[in-house]
Image (cartoon, rainbow over all chains, first blue to last red; front, side):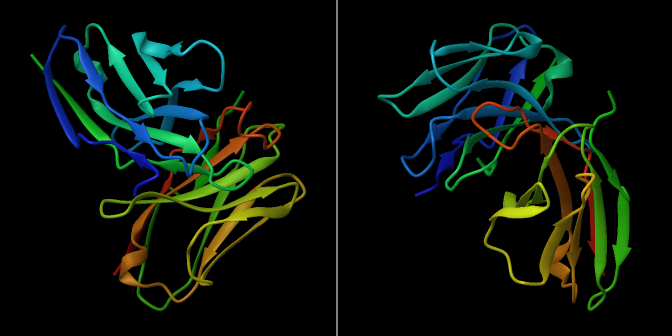
Length: 114
Length: 115
């Protein structure tokens, strides 16, 4: 089984609509969880991360994510998207193994339409 | 503060050649990790260096190697290039190498095309 699973490869949404990008993780990775965004021809930018504490994590650009241990999920949400949110979004977990190794999901392409 | 820089940004090589990519981390950062991004395999971890020592290694053949210098700059080398090595190679740096507390900052990547 995939360590980090993003079920949706593409999510189309209209501008100003809410969006949820789904991410599930397996027991083979840690519960240190991250969401990154990648704009065309650029590297990855951290949106938010969950390390411990409050299960609702707020990030940059109005995004937030909720850690749910019982459902092994870390879904990303935004209440109202903008055209500029069009990008690829990656969920990641630390591990397996020590150090800084990140295991990434396969990515979700968010396409915001007018 | 300057971000993570990677050179070159674009590279075209032919099969059988070797290539060296460079990554300069954010000033003060001691951990550098490398990732390969392809449409088919997604983002895959190559290796991580911390204080000039390889701390973790992904599941890649020995043709992929790396090193880190005393100023934390890192290079990765791919020998005997294959068509499947065409990818975006990303490096990320962090302060102390403890992923549970430090944010990893990614560079813009080097786009390698193997013909």
